[in-house]
Length: 140
Image (cartoon, rainbow, N blue to C red):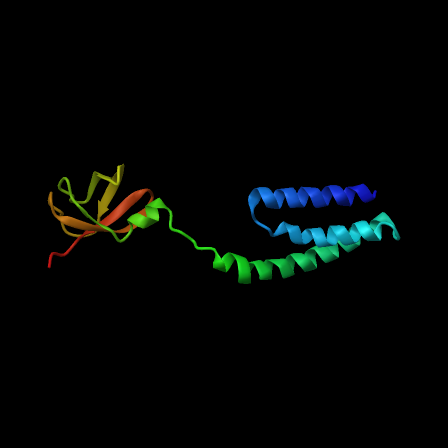
């Protein structure tokens, strides 16, 4: 029955490599301990060792991952999040709703302020239900 632990170790490592999560590899500590204990104890004790050590090291590993790994990885905004806050020029009149091409994509626009005339600037203030929420940009 010792081969079960080796298979579990390989599966967990392969899963972490594929997902680049590195979290489940901490379970491997319990699996290795259970595999080594298999030379001296029964299978039921091996399972107990694997579960207890796996949970303990999973908790330890998660806190280490949070502290040292995940907080150092830069979280880049996705394409649509980069639009929020930007200023664009209206191609057509935007009263309450409209449609306009922005950065090569046609967007449904919901105007939360006064009417925006063609050629005037507007600022994207949010995205809700795949619609850009905009307000007229004040001219200075």
